[in-house]
Image 1 (cartoon, rainbow, N blue to C red):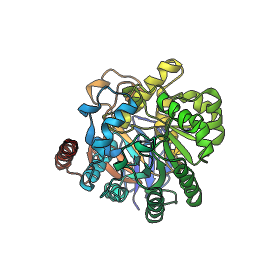
Image 2: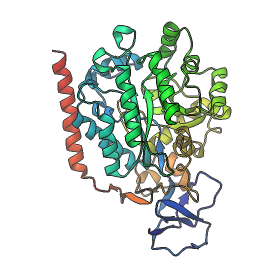
Image 3: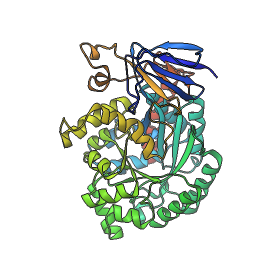
Image 4: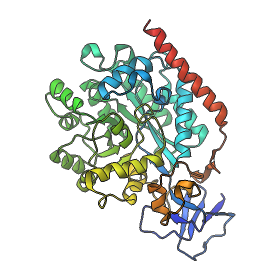
Length: 455
């Protein structure tokens, strides 16, 4: 195992109180030393990396995404709509996904995330039409090939529009098929050890697209196998009205009713909670993934990050799908989160340290991980290195603040489990020109299939 000294960073955010101004020492897949200024490694090193031009952070952790949606960015039929109408426009398009589209969408989304400093990515895939039953298998294979850490959530939809749900019937599966495949994926891919590169979580899409029975059975299956649970909740007021009409209760009451109000659950969005519900979520140890750009694009509202954290909720950050954000840039999302939360709490109450915490240890904790998200001895060697050479940074004085305030867009180097996956701004082993060609062709083919299906 090589021992690497990432030496004398321009600035470093560890996510802890530890001083690492002298650098970070990595052996194998772990951090073995953090060095104070002027301190040298206690362990002989194989080579050093001059980080004097770099701001170093823990690898960013993306807690919510839909990789397949990279194929429908800025889709004409879905423009200028709020969530329910937006979904109604896109469900018939997404129903035409095939295996090749799924693979290239996953690869592009992961590459885009890695280039933005992301080392762990979660994806919520819930569309498995006929012929795409092994979508998660394709995703696992792609992530392993790229060497990125991934948490794939086996999504599902079982409540079609003819039974009061939102998705068209040809996009849903039977409950037994969903549960059987969930069990298979856990058995085949879920890793439980520290440093796990591939994990599986269970993720019925939302209260308006699955049955109550499926939510309950998923909770039971998750407890049986000790895997995390994930779903969309309280994203819009429409969802609140749906729960009141269909179940006679608010979304958090419904969450408790189906056995999901516990510390193995993290939720996407989490905007429309009242004060009492926030306290209940914190007491239960639930995680929330804040998705600022998506929430602005669909005019869904603003997550109450500080109130949630004060109650004990584990708050993370996600870019959400690239059709409700139109990008998969996590370092850009850090800036967006800081500014959106300042609108709610004031500029003195939300700092760049808060936003970086949400994107690192916050996301990791929300998804049940304690081995990633900080730069500390014994933690996984996942880190991102950014230069401040672009024109946007000229004249800046505090390097760490400048990373966020001046709007960093791309990492120079990214390490995952002690291995360089992005080096000098390029992703290892990826032919970018070929990837973009394949992805653009797949997006055009998907749009054409959608047009053909409605003729």
